[in-house]
Figure (tube, rainbow, N blue to C red):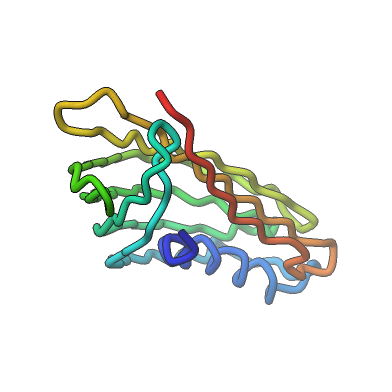
Length: 160
Protein backbone atom coordinates (compact mmCIF):
# COMPACT_ATOMS: atom_id res chain seq x y z
CA UNK A 1 0.00 0.00 0.00
CA UNK A 2 2.89 2.35 0.73
CA UNK A 3 3.88 2.30 -2.95
CA UNK A 4 0.58 3.96 -3.79
CA UNK A 5 1.92 7.06 -2.05
CA UNK A 6 4.05 7.65 -5.15
CA UNK A 7 0.96 9.01 -6.86
CA UNK A 8 0.93 11.92 -4.43
CA UNK A 9 4.44 13.09 -5.23
CA UNK A 10 3.16 16.04 -7.23
CA UNK A 11 0.92 17.13 -4.35
CA UNK A 12 4.05 16.93 -2.24
CA UNK A 13 5.58 19.35 -4.73
CA UNK A 14 2.92 21.88 -3.80
CA UNK A 15 3.97 21.51 -0.18
CA UNK A 16 7.58 21.99 -1.25
CA UNK A 17 6.74 25.17 -3.15
CA UNK A 18 4.87 26.53 -0.15
CA UNK A 19 7.60 25.30 2.18
CA UNK A 20 10.47 27.11 0.45
CA UNK A 21 8.52 30.29 -0.13
CA UNK A 22 9.21 32.77 2.68
CA UNK A 23 6.02 33.78 4.46
CA UNK A 24 6.66 37.42 3.65
CA UNK A 25 7.34 36.80 -0.06
CA UNK A 26 4.97 38.42 -2.51
CA UNK A 27 4.91 38.58 -6.29
CA UNK A 28 4.27 41.63 -8.45
CA UNK A 29 2.27 39.30 -10.68
CA UNK A 30 1.19 35.67 -10.59
CA UNK A 31 3.80 32.91 -10.72
CA UNK A 32 2.40 29.96 -12.72
CA UNK A 33 3.64 26.36 -12.89
CA UNK A 34 2.07 23.47 -14.80
CA UNK A 35 3.10 19.85 -14.34
CA UNK A 36 2.14 16.60 -16.02
CA UNK A 37 3.05 13.35 -14.26
CA UNK A 38 2.48 9.66 -14.99
CA UNK A 39 3.39 6.92 -12.54
CA UNK A 40 3.13 3.15 -12.70
CA UNK A 41 1.91 1.85 -9.36
CA UNK A 42 1.87 -1.62 -7.82
CA UNK A 43 0.52 -2.42 -4.35
CA UNK A 44 -1.09 -5.16 -2.27
CA UNK A 45 -4.15 -4.49 -0.13
CA UNK A 46 -6.66 -6.72 1.63
CA UNK A 47 -10.20 -7.02 0.30
CA UNK A 48 -12.19 -6.14 3.45
CA UNK A 49 -15.13 -8.26 2.23
CA UNK A 50 -13.16 -11.51 1.96
CA UNK A 51 -9.89 -10.98 3.85
CA UNK A 52 -7.95 -11.96 0.73
CA UNK A 53 -4.77 -10.13 -0.28
CA UNK A 54 -5.08 -8.55 -3.75
CA UNK A 55 -2.17 -7.47 -5.94
CA UNK A 56 -2.96 -4.32 -7.94
CA UNK A 57 -1.06 -2.82 -10.87
CA UNK A 58 -1.97 0.35 -12.69
CA UNK A 59 -1.17 3.85 -13.77
CA UNK A 60 -1.91 7.28 -12.36
CA UNK A 61 -1.88 10.33 -14.59
CA UNK A 62 -2.06 13.74 -12.91
CA UNK A 63 -1.85 17.25 -14.26
CA UNK A 64 -1.50 20.29 -12.04
CA UNK A 65 -1.85 23.94 -12.93
CA UNK A 66 -0.59 25.97 -9.96
CA UNK A 67 -0.61 29.72 -9.48
CA UNK A 68 1.05 31.67 -6.66
CA UNK A 69 -0.65 35.04 -6.52
CA UNK A 70 0.56 38.49 -5.44
CA UNK A 71 -0.66 37.78 -1.87
CA UNK A 72 1.35 34.51 -1.63
CA UNK A 73 -1.81 32.44 -2.06
CA UNK A 74 -1.63 29.14 -3.91
CA UNK A 75 -4.34 28.11 -6.37
CA UNK A 76 -4.15 24.63 -7.86
CA UNK A 77 -6.30 22.81 -10.39
CA UNK A 78 -5.58 19.09 -10.29
CA UNK A 79 -6.92 16.62 -12.83
CA UNK A 80 -6.20 12.97 -12.21
CA UNK A 81 -6.96 9.72 -13.94
CA UNK A 82 -6.16 6.38 -12.28
CA UNK A 83 -6.74 2.86 -13.55
CA UNK A 84 -5.94 -0.40 -11.77
CA UNK A 85 -6.39 -4.12 -12.31
CA UNK A 86 -5.85 -6.70 -9.62
CA UNK A 87 -5.78 -10.39 -8.88
CA UNK A 88 -6.66 -12.17 -5.63
CA UNK A 89 -3.50 -13.89 -4.43
CA UNK A 90 -5.29 -17.03 -3.21
CA UNK A 91 -8.51 -17.19 -5.30
CA UNK A 92 -7.31 -15.70 -8.59
CA UNK A 93 -10.41 -13.45 -8.61
CA UNK A 94 -9.98 -10.43 -10.89
CA UNK A 95 -10.49 -6.85 -9.80
CA UNK A 96 -10.60 -3.49 -11.56
CA UNK A 97 -10.89 0.12 -10.52
CA UNK A 98 -10.68 3.50 -12.17
CA UNK A 99 -11.38 7.08 -11.28
CA UNK A 100 -11.19 10.39 -13.12
CA UNK A 101 -11.73 13.61 -11.29
CA UNK A 102 -10.76 17.24 -11.03
CA UNK A 103 -10.42 19.34 -7.94
CA UNK A 104 -9.58 22.94 -7.17
CA UNK A 105 -7.40 23.79 -4.19
CA UNK A 106 -7.23 27.39 -2.95
CA UNK A 107 -4.84 28.22 -0.13
CA UNK A 108 -4.97 31.88 0.88
CA UNK A 109 -1.62 33.47 1.48
CA UNK A 110 0.63 34.05 3.12
CA UNK A 111 1.07 30.89 5.24
CA UNK A 112 0.07 29.33 7.57
CA UNK A 113 -2.24 27.11 5.58
CA UNK A 114 -3.54 23.58 5.45
CA UNK A 115 -5.16 21.28 2.95
CA UNK A 116 -7.15 18.06 3.36
CA UNK A 117 -8.38 15.78 0.58
CA UNK A 118 -10.31 12.49 0.52
CA UNK A 119 -10.47 10.31 -2.60
CA UNK A 120 -12.52 7.15 -3.06
CA UNK A 121 -11.55 4.51 -5.61
CA UNK A 122 -14.30 1.93 -6.17
CA UNK A 123 -12.89 -1.58 -6.70
CA UNK A 124 -15.09 -4.04 -8.64
CA UNK A 125 -14.88 -7.82 -8.63
CA UNK A 126 -16.04 -9.76 -11.70
CA UNK A 127 -18.98 -12.07 -11.11
CA UNK A 128 -18.84 -11.78 -7.33
CA UNK A 129 -20.38 -9.54 -4.72
CA UNK A 130 -17.10 -8.49 -3.08
CA UNK A 131 -16.77 -4.89 -4.30
CA UNK A 132 -15.01 -2.45 -2.00
CA UNK A 133 -13.86 1.14 -1.82
CA UNK A 134 -10.24 2.18 -1.27
CA UNK A 135 -10.31 5.54 0.54
CA UNK A 136 -7.28 7.80 0.55
CA UNK A 137 -6.78 10.68 3.02
CA UNK A 138 -4.18 13.38 2.37
CA UNK A 139 -3.36 16.29 4.68
CA UNK A 140 -0.67 19.00 4.45
CA UNK A 141 0.06 21.72 6.99
CA UNK A 142 2.42 24.67 6.39
CA UNK A 143 3.33 26.93 9.34
CA UNK A 144 3.66 30.74 9.38
CA UNK A 145 7.35 30.43 8.41
CA UNK A 146 6.37 28.58 5.23
CA UNK A 147 7.70 25.23 6.56
CA UNK A 148 5.82 22.00 5.92
CA UNK A 149 5.02 20.76 9.43
CA UNK A 150 2.72 17.83 8.69
CA UNK A 151 2.17 15.56 5.73
CA UNK A 152 -0.26 12.68 6.22
CA UNK A 153 -1.10 9.91 3.73
CA UNK A 154 -3.60 7.37 5.01
CA UNK A 155 -5.50 4.55 3.29
CA UNK A 156 -8.41 2.40 4.35
CA UNK A 157 -10.54 -0.21 2.60
CA UNK A 158 -14.28 -0.61 3.20
CA UNK A 159 -16.59 -3.39 1.99
CA UNK A 160 -19.48 -2.16 -0.18
